[in-house]
Length: 385
Image (cartoon, helix red, strand yellow):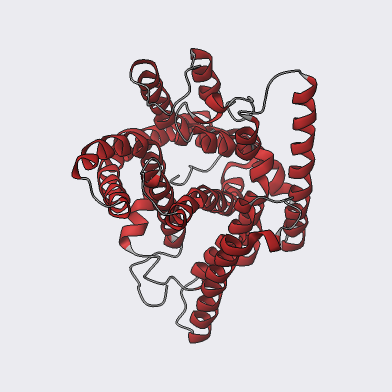
């Protein structure tokens, strides 16, 4: 913030999204690469937690914007909120569903299940794939679709949560409540599915990891951050910079501790690694809200963050193409991962920049026009989404 006046107050959130999507691309770049050492494979696999960083950023920004929308939209805040969210997500997401469904039907990867049917497309389009206990429904149509389903279900809670969580204390209490809820829902789901007589062993761990109750504590971290951060402002204070550096260091140490010794932090296994690492991400985001260090908040990360939704959906097919060509070079496994990562990120960024302009922005514009038509005459004109 202090060292670069061209960076706006909230660009750190776009940078966080950029970091998140880069982490997701990294983990997928390493999948299927043979010859990686156990250590390298384990480290690359942690990129999966970029999704949790997305969730934290999402909860934070939704709480930041909802109050402003409430002042502008009045009694129409809730329906307009859902309309904005739908037209922000649905156009690109629906195109991805159709595209990847065609791939599954006509040229499925060898690692994909064979039990795809059109019902999974319908579930995904209704954003209900996150509540249907099947690994195909929840995550393959489109690939990574589980996180979009979880996001959309979380959106349903925002109007209630914003009204009920009014201060830091209530946000922290909500966070603890979600931890209890996640455990109770897990054991409830296991017992209900056991009573159904179905063989759930193959896909139940997937479902219980992906569904909203298991991810709700991560969103709660973003809500806590909302009350901690308040309104970020420009500062040249060395004390602020030192505090931010301390939080970033603490974030790195905490995440390192979780990765190397998580069993000691969570001896009974009640909470999965994704939540413990999300605590470290919370420290990171808080630090960047105080001081936007250029190593994290720069024009490249900000640009990635702006198109991160499209990039998240597009990179799966780009990786498949890139791997096909790089496999012919017979590079060492770690170099192959690096090559796949860089090529995928670059190609996906350019494709996503196009889809962002041609699809995502068009969708949000349609939503804005619809909302403006629905607004009562005395309602203020909506601000830019």
